[in-house]
Length: 171
Image: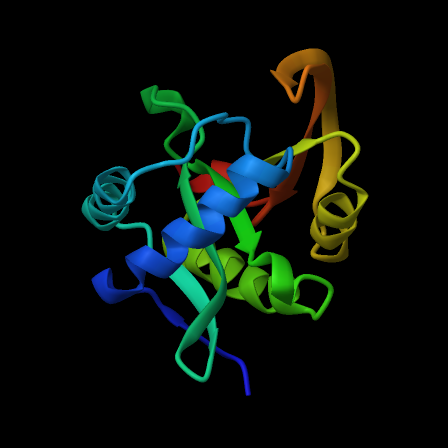
């Protein structure tokens, strides 16, 4: 049975393995070199410091995927908007894991009184786009050839979910 829980420091090596596989084999992350354990530990510590949880989908002690939110842009005016990330291990894709990892992100963003979640998705990643649309995200931008990986130019789509239309009225 797959359970969703908040990640711990003990999960970091498994998070790193998933992330590095995605770096090396997909266009979901536009890094080209695998990350080190120290880099992932620093990333995790920053998430904790910023107050943004990392969620894991686990089964029998194995992390199958993870998700998180983080700042969309570093300027003060963007403080009510976050960007989400959802990553699933290659041998667990197509099993509904990402679908389980989305609700905690959305619920956390609401609990933090955030207004919007933005997701940047490589334009040909139809699976990720469909996942986000299932949760109410809508495409708001399509940037042509803004990324380069695997010897090709890539387009980037931005999808957005407005959490509460009334939020701006109380600020």
